[in-house]
Length: 93
Image (cartoon, rainbow, N blue to C red):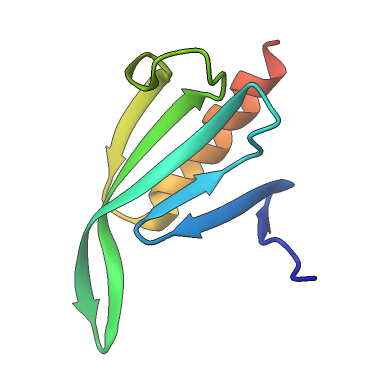
């Protein structure tokens, strides 16, 4: 079985240009969407990333699940803010 990629104790899952950070079993999850990339040598590097703190409750309409959102200019900056938001949200049960 493949080991799930983790960052600061929470799972990271990627599907196309969307990265989910956190567990759907928890009350909150982070969705990071890569909106734009730039070429650095021969690699595509994220240059615009949307970060959203979302409720995981399936009974809430998807547009009402977003608690907080921001845009960052790198994946590093995005995951940095994502980690803080997720920790705070999960701590405030």
